[in-house]
Image (tube, rainbow, N blue to C red; front, side):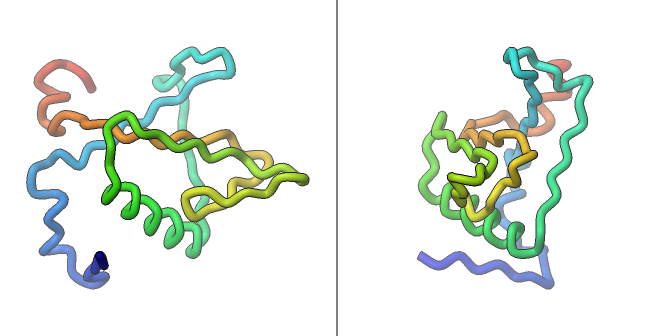
Length: 114
């Protein structure tokens, strides 16, 4: 299967029709405590990292399974591994991508979950 994206026109993007294209970002300290409200997450992606990660995320979406997760660990001098189309630098933190059926975005405001 080929997935085609109209780079210049987003009017036909079907993934946003139901407002269920929701992501949740959480940040945990080394002890596993949720520090999301005190944190700011930044990702610095090169052009090819954007293309690589985007491509792999599309593949993951087409092989979607709730609770499936992927760990992307920082590179070490003796173990430089590319996962999900990117390399993480040694000073990066581990990134975990989890497949999760989230609610529609409006539901997060109705239930007070902002």
